[in-house]
Length: 223
Ligand SMILES: [Cu+2]
Image (cartoon, rainbow, N blue to C red; front, side, top):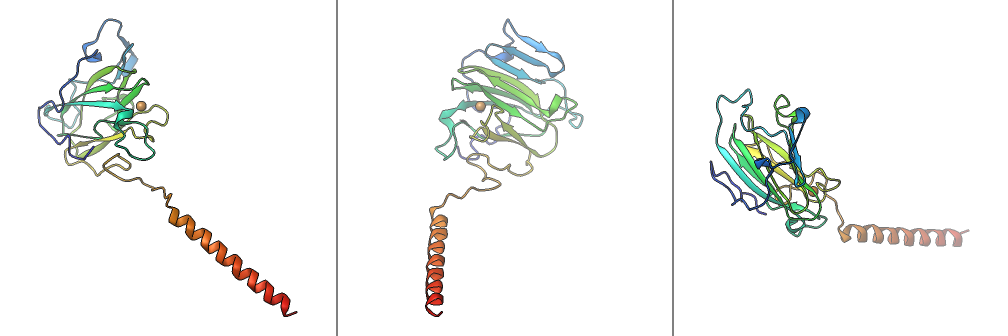
C-alpha cells in the first residue's frame, strides 16, 4: 500500500462501508464493562468509544473522518517476514476530528485495530480499541486532540504487530513517521541477512587459517 492512499479528504467516506454486523449499531446482547466503556458481542468489541466529548484543547469539533480498513493475511504487500497486515497502513485526520473506523477482519483469527497515545482523561489507558472476530466487522468512533501528532495503530494479538499489523494515524502535520510501518518506514534496527556478509567472514577465516598454517610450518622447519 503506497503512502498517501488515504490522504485527507475532509468529511468524505474514504472507502465505501461494507455490509456486515456493526457494533456501532449496538445489537442485542451488547455488554458495557465499567469505565473502559467496552461494548462486546460475538463479533468482537469496541473499547473507549467517544463521539461527543471534546478534548480540552479543542474549542469545537473539527471534521468527520470515516476510515474503512480491512485486516488479514491478504494485506502483507508481499513483504518478507510479514504474515498479516492492514489494507491501509496510514490514515489522516485534521486536529479535533471525529474519526469513525470500520474494521473488517478478512481472516479466520481475531484481529484488532488499536490506537495509542490519546488523552487519558478521555480514553482510559490512552487507547481506543476495535477487535473483530474472524470474518466480522466492527466500527467505533473517537475524537483526536488538536496537536500535530502521529499515533501508533496496531493489532495487539501475540506477534501480529511484529508480523505486519502496524499502522499510523497522522493528525494535522503529524510528528514524524513511526518506524516499521509497512510500505512507509523502515525498521529501527534493520536485520541483515545478506549472503555477502557471511562470505566475507568465511573467506577471512580461511585466509587467516592458511596464513597460520604457513607460519607454523616455517616455524617448525626453522627449529
Ligand atoms: Cu491481528
